[in-house]
Length: 273
Image (cartoon, rainbow, N blue to C red):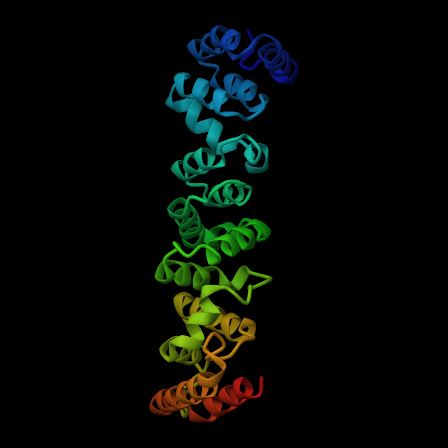
């Protein structure tokens, strides 16, 4: 027969499975695979409602079909499948961290923290490539970050690094996010952002490397998006002292880094909040 069964044939087989059960789809799909018509078999699988039962069946149809299914299935299509964590793991196995994030953002039960961090870390690693290809779906990233920020079991160090890597794409940074709180608690983090964004006194302009430009973009986004101030979580009686100690530390460090003028401006803006 033809190399593919076409749109109509795929829809007919999918409807058959919906009417009689997935077990009745085994023979047709295995027949297609035996004929070397994997594309047709995948076309059928993609037209079936996403569910753990379907995924169990996909596992039995071989690694090639499984890989192609998870490489092509739409993340919103699996969002209400009943097991978004399983879908997220499968997406990560085929190098689709953006789809894993989308799947986990719809998790209504307890959030698998480790898996969520893995998905966001993977997204951060592939971010330049994805953005270049036109990816811009930050809504689910922000939803997932907000849930992690609210989860006391999420480790500060990993979550802060994730927020730093994704900062340039976020439209809304929650006041409860770990990264802004870390700025107010760790002067060295603020100093790092400042030294990335601003040249030292007397340093001539030069062309930045790609890594340096990403650091500049991230540091600038962090400084612009931070609307809080050091000591915001401290008891009111200690807040002023925390702010003053932080300011002196930052000014001393940036003076040593030959960035005193801009340091005075930025710290003054924070003190005025």
